Amino acid sequence: MAEASPIVEVSAQNFEAEVVERSTSTPVFVLLWTPQIPEAAEMYRTLERLAKQYLGKFLLAHCDVARDRAIAQSLRIQSVPSIRVVHNGQIVDQLDRGQSEETLRALIDRLTQSDSERLQHTLKDVIEREDWKRAIQILKQALAEEPNNSSYRVEWADVLAMRGAFSGAHQVVDSIKAGTPDLVRPQTRIEIAQEARAMGSLKDSLRSVELDGSDLEARYRCTILFADLRRYREALDQALQILSADRSFRDDIGRLVMIRIMQLMPKDSPIAQEFRQEMFNIMH
Image 1 (cartoon, rainbow, N blue to C red):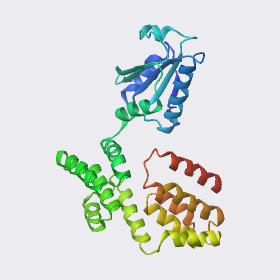
Image 2: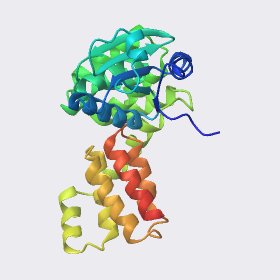
Image 3: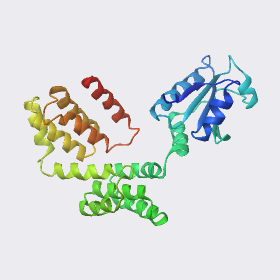
Image 4: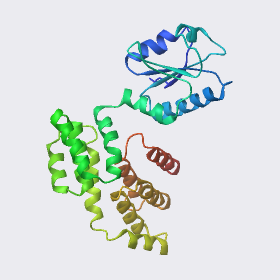
């Protein structure tokens, strides 16, 4: 059975089924808009793009008020664009006038993220600054509040691996039940870090690629070394070059290492989405 679309046009006739009923399992963003108003049209385009990126985590239910005023009247909408967020049959939030993509993402994340995803979001900037002391403080506090939360332990292992504390990361990974969501992320990070340690310098590998672009071994070293530095776009680009050049090289290592690198990245990463499409194009 095909999955329901994350975008639907609503009217007074289908509002109960498409908004109220579906809101029991998924937050529904009801957008009142019209293409005749540029600000409203831009809001629609932004939410349409986000609905596709978030892969069904929320539903965009839109209504063109120039063609159908019934919903706007029942919700007492005074101007467009306007958003009413419906969850479990109730309006839980609202936004009036145009909103930035950043504001919309923040609202979507607040309504749809799991505990682990919220923690990842909190850690994101700290990790980008490589402020490992602060990252560990955040994780210790989270684990003190919920010591049996496996998703928090996954983040703990991942931070230890990024910090280079592999012994501790191994111990935490071993303490987490097999099959726990995202456990593959710290496991893969540890494996890539250990592989990178035996590959010499990134500078030398890049020089080898510059001298001979067909040197797939050098490209593979670049892939692993970039991934270990969390320079994922550059890592995936090197792996894509391997995949494009020779799928038989190391038993399709170009494709396999791309999958491994994507396991290190957020599920909604636009970089990962871009390279998944590139990989699909080459393979098909």
